[in-house]
Length: 421
Image (cartoon, rainbow, N blue to C red; front, side, top):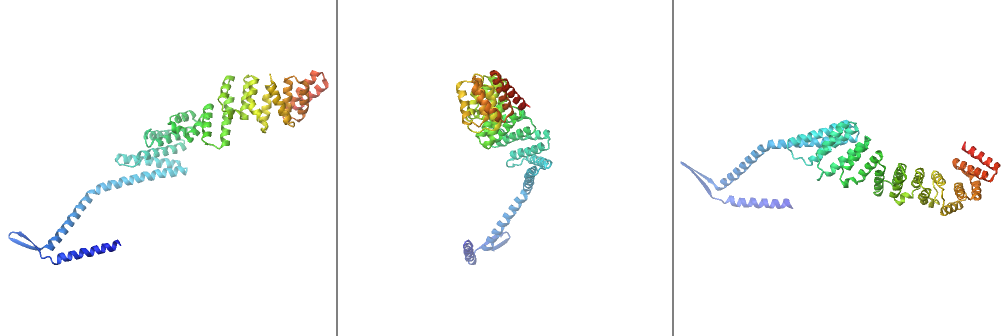
């Protein structure tokens, strides 16, 4: 449709020109003494149009000729900019491929191209970010090559080229995070924690930063800081639930084992969350540590109460034996409620020789000799753990000696000796 309209317009112009020029009888006379030149008006108009076209073409040609040096300069700068981007892409490619020496060489080439553009005062978009990325890639390759001096030099240049605030602040935060990871790879926990502490508040609470802080705190044996970080990571769902629970549990055990006195251990226990106090491993380990530090047996049993109340749930063998052992060693001053709890558990699970044994030891503590002898007689042959079995036979021997039954006492001591071997 547009072509048809153009064709109609062209025909209209041709008709108008033909009508005007065909009947135009006008002339133009030029007087140049002593000459006189007569020209038709159509010719004069044609010469004017041709002159204007020639003048326009001459002016455009002159302008184009004058612009050639600027165009050549822009072309050279564009080639340098393309070479810089190509070197940056090549550095990333080589780094991913594990060609670290080539990657560093390409990144340093990108830095050199950027400097050449800066000397030429060329307005390259995102120049600051490109320069910082080039230095970071060179630092990453140097770290892989175990060239710490070159790595630190490129890192410092990258940080110097990026302000702490502004649109490129995230690039600076990324460089700080990478430097912390490099310090962790070098087993330098103090430097890693220092660089993580220099991060802004928002960046310091990101999952990547928290993971690095957790690793650095554990490496530097800062168990309390590592525990707080692990709790944050668990709340952020940075780990699967089972893995998060395992990490928190191991840190809690390490924190409990590191207590040097009962006051410190009690502060640690008070700072634990209720769910953490109910963990069987943590509660049993804390109670055992409290007993080792000279804590009161009443408090030891109080810490074990949440675990004991969950005894209906089957515990792993080592945990159950550890629980029985800690309770056995802390039966001094056993009150009626605890005795009732132990007897109820023993009656609820009559086939569990460990509970029968614990109930017997509780009866011994309460001076219930007859009941203790009966329970020990049932439990001793069935106990699978050698330590508990030997302890049961020794208790039977002592009870027999109290009664004056030398034959039974000798038999019990002989059984205890055989188990101990």
